[in-house]
Amino acid sequence: MASKSKATITDVARAAGVSTATAGRVLGGYGYTSEEKKEQVLKAAQHLGYRPNALARGLITGKTRTLGVVAGDIQNPFYASVLRGISNVAEANGFGLLITNSDEAQQKEVHSVELLAQKQVDGLIVTPSDTRKARHLHNLRAMGMPLVLIDRTVAGLQVDRVATDNIAAAEHAVRHLIAAGHRRIGIVAELADEESARLDMFLARAVVGDPIESETLYPSWQRLLGYIRAHRIEGLPVDPRLTLRAGSYSAAAAQAIVPRLMTAPDPPTALFTTDGTMSE
DNA sequence: CAATTTACCCTTTGCACGAC
DNA sequence: GTCGTGCAAAGGGTAAATTG
Image 1 (cartoon, rainbow, N blue to C red):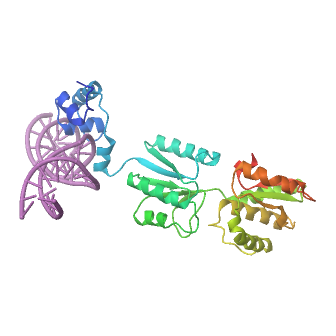
Image 2: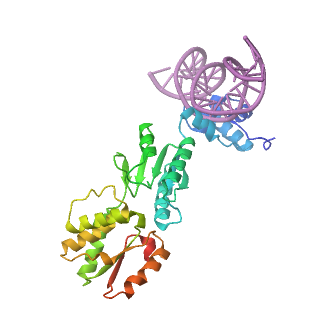
Image 3: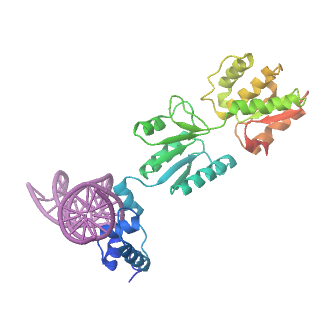
């Protein structure tokens, strides 16, 4: 009798001889209940194999106790460790997680956000794939959806963000290399070819020390900026020929491009990469 | 036949009432 | 006044029933 269709609060209430309200108060842990009824209800629930219906609960409370996460690529070790942390905190607070990949493509990110919003998540954690325009994220805020950005920011979007100071970190790392005696330090960056013109302009400005709006730069550009600033601080020239554009953050992309630099005349004595996966 | 209304899904919660 | 309990409504969307 207990197995056919799933037991509801009504079934438990009937078996325990109480109202659905009382059964609900025991099972949901809200309101007042006597020890006696509590025992009866729990016993009946156990016997019937009752499992709360989160859909119905969410319908009336307006909460799902579920968070949505849009990661770039969960196979990337960076996202894996970020997700691990999110998962730990969510679980400790009684929240579930819905995780999607954007593959760093905004179209997929928009699709993911829409899907998670339809699933009625209570909040979203997103690594925005485009730091300059993100209408869908602005819309989320306008509709009151709690939103936290990871790793990157979006121009004009006032929300909390968890990120590292990429510029300072890169600057620190490169100065460390300089202090160790290196004078020609190569940099392998994710930078794609189609951004080539913008990058050249960016490089030129950074090298002469123009103030740069660095908040909305991609992390790899921020690290490049840190690399350049370290040179400026230490009074070393930046040789553009030492800047390699891998086009992606994969180890394979780095492997394909680094030998060209190392076999050229006057090769670098140290290498700095803008992404952890490339240094493998 | 299309258009509109009703009935449900399952749980939580406001309200009323009785007991202490 | 506080606690314990039950009734009934509500919540968003849709399938089913009813209306014109």
